[in-house]
Image (cartoon, rainbow, N blue to C red; front, side, top):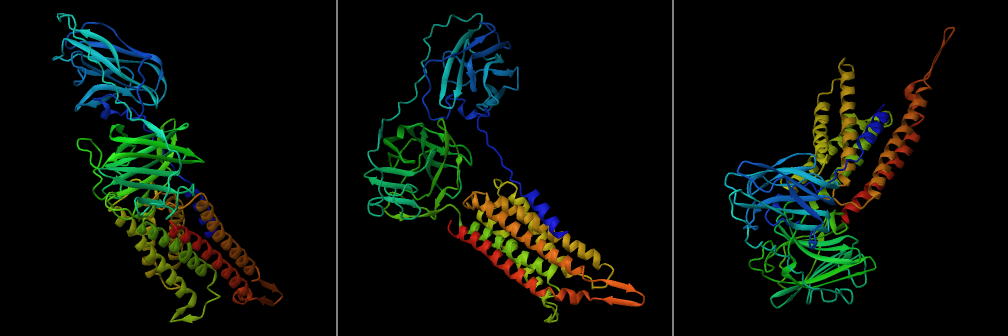
Length: 591
């Protein structure tokens, strides 16, 4: 029964649960003023979409139907503005006709100032109502930004001008829409970067430690070389999507100065950005960067640029004469759009000033407290609890001699289970110390961990009130003790499966999952072998009644015949268990 419950529960709870983040939801309120998507590409000049209205004149309080149409598009941002001041705030408000495809946005702290899409599905026509305000100007012009694909969009497509009945004809020349700033020229790097000047002329961050991008394609490399009042940045790594680095005041994403090199076909775009929380980076203007260059060869992406140490008046750019934690990350990109980094970013162990003096520094993709958390949980729930369960279930008769007043098997079982509880308590605290509170980005793992913690503490408390052997409550205790322990083991295994996939621990995959499955199979297989052995022994206990003759074979004697077999199975199990544990601990230690 124990084997069945453990096996079934483990494989039900171990199913991986994943979530998908979808950014094109239309909640683009931050773009209300400029109406420019934060995609880091140049807007197309010739629009292929148009705006039409149900009437060309209006009075305050009127409701006018506005239609956006054209070839299929995925996203849009529609606003109305004073025709005399297109750079001013939106005018009036909108009312939805179909809330399935459009939604109201809050701009300038006013709900309904603008309309956008609700999903990235393709659409060819959108209809909404515009509500004329009481303080409307004489002339109102509609503007729309339309996104066809991530890198194909049109900004502030002009629509018709509507006027109040008694207004003078609109004769003021239309304000021209300022073009996007011209990107600085980009060149190709003639050769690969070299780590030969690291520590002498360059401030370098490398992973693995002391690798050289000139000779090792798998080397993640970031260098800073001071040149008077500017810094030359070089970044290299094996990536088919993007490479990025960021300066941060702490070890968490958010309010950071970031830079990306994004691969698109056979081109690399170098893009400054800033991070607002644990979300998609917001692309910024490249005007603060110079000497942009890149190179693609043998699956390695390299890019470089120059920027001034201080950039007064340039928003979101940090001064480089201050110490920061430095992040180095990589991930996938499709058609110029980036996705969440594929592994935990490399983060320096401490803050550094990259303009101070050249040096070699390292970093880690997993911090000590998280390593210790994983290691202690593996020891507790892969080793001590598993061995303790086997001893209590199958080795009572093998180690039945008294040891310090109790049977030896019981003393070993109790010691292992108390060790499990102690290790779990210590490991449970470490992530809270690391995060400074609850982690809302770890999925179901912390919730399962809390349940395991409760059960791990409850189990020895229940054992402390164990009734005597012949007490009528003893059977109820035995079932309760078994149920709580089995539930704790099942949930702990599920929590470990989910925890191994968290980026904070960053175990290499996919072997981690296969190894964990191997451990579960090893333990369940051992229990099955011992259960079969115990069943065969029990069959030897027979009572034969044949005309006053009874032949009784003692169960204790029968079981004693199998002690040698049990010891061999136990020794083999311990060797396998320790092997699995060493594999996991070695992987954690190498991070």
